[in-house]
Image (cartoon, rainbow, N blue to C red; front, side):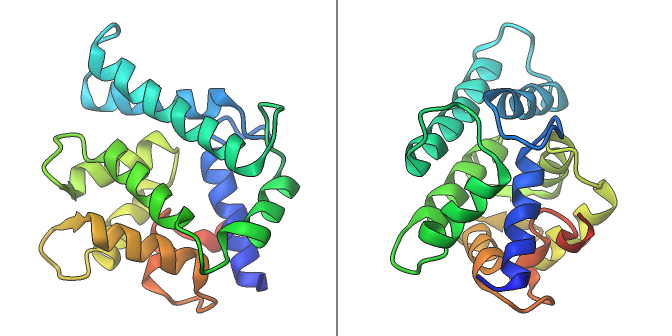
Length: 180
């Protein structure tokens, strides 16, 4: 793992660590689902809100299973080791699978694309600097059609983790990665 990749993997950890306590717990994923539900106007007891919570918990459970960890918390060192030993290897589909999860979470109208509003909602849900969202959106929207397709998101996510180029467009998927 290069130093740049290490910084980006830790940035992703910090993005997921929604409460900022230095560990990943199920509550971090629940906070994102709650924030996104509030952002898009799902009522307190709606099936839409519940569906987002289920998706969020499912991702956390999948991460725990993939890491092989019984304890329901993940430290940064475990996260880095998991990425180095498994995720950054070219012969798996982990990045593709995680990209598809994020896509399904943020394509709220389920039209097969993430528009700029949905992308801004993602930045808000993860507590990211909204000032970076417009630039990130434009860089990831490779064909400039005003929406991000599943393939564009997968490409950006893959580039975020695999590229050692600090100027790669995919580096912006979660805002400015080199500010953590």
